[in-house]
Image 1 (cartoon, rainbow, N blue to C red):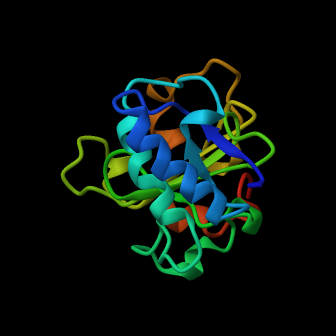
Image 2: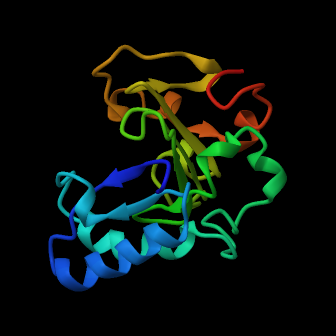
Length: 169
């Protein structure tokens, strides 16, 4: 039995999507796997996204973070697994098994053409217990939106890798 699941339904074809994801969850205990039988719908496009998630979560895969130098991942808690690919853009996200909805870590590959300078370089988004953690480890109050603290919420990867812990310097 896996340590935890992200809860999502395959909204488009539960029979085919659900079967593939259920098989994945039984093969890879302890990994982050989405399965339609595991809970309520979290949002619109998760059903389509879910189809590919199980494929990257198991042993033998290169992991969702194969695009990044693995030495830069030293702060990612080991028990969070290999991570899963982002919904859009190149990047990887991890979830705390004890609090998968509220405590997450995401590393995104920079896009030099992005309008925000903080997203033009490889960067990290940190959320702990539903609160955004910003540059320098600043904890923003509950309810703060990323759009309110855009530059602070997107921590340059080169800065984050100097932190002592995944969630604070």
